[in-house]
Length: 277
Image 1 (cartoon, one colour):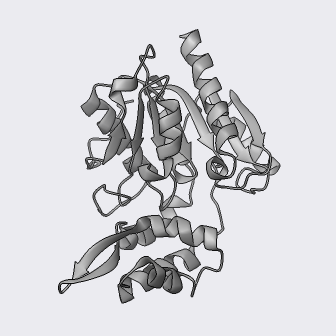
Image 2 (image 1 turned 60 degrees about the horizontal axis):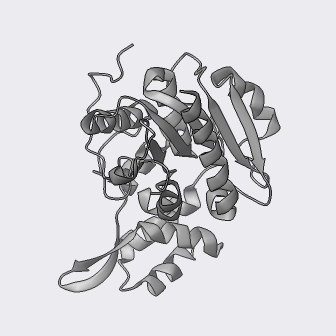
Image 3 (image 1 turned 90 degrees about the horizontal axis):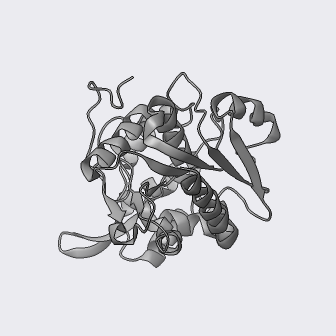
């Protein structure tokens, strides 16, 4: 199977690259964020991991500084990342994805397994989810409609729909300073309209028909229901060699709740795979 579908238009993703920190590992680590996230969310982790290897963190389409375009299927997002690998001359990489990014990573592994040296999936299963993000989308639309002057006013608008301050702080990473008729305002740096339109594709399963039988680590939060025990049979069908590790006192944003444990688990796993190559 070809790596990319010629009928899918790929976009040039924004990314960060610690290429001067590659060390002895020929396969870099590619980090893929979740819904409404960006490469910026992973700065502290990238800083830790780059001491041993090259780390590339991407902004998926309609996120961060990447282009806003129609279509946000897993095949499209997977092809975008593999097009970036081609651009950078990377034959294969260790691929880490959180939440929606985990499904992108799974799609890459299923469609082009030779490009994935190992797979790390953070708190997501290859299943269709029923929970929604209506409150989150409403909160961001509130900001887009009112274009507040500063982050304090933006937070007040977000709070109309989202009570939890940690979630509002996460959503605020999608704000950027801009101007409206010469006046400073807070705008969105996320393709919200395109994401909402493509949301049915986001909650569904990763693309691909075959399992990925390469090395795989699945990290899940003990306080999260995104990878429940009932989902493990479906996970094993797609990732038969997955080793499932539960991080204590961590929710869905396990990399933020338990940063050191998360960093160490990823680093130890990638080190082991690099040593066996």
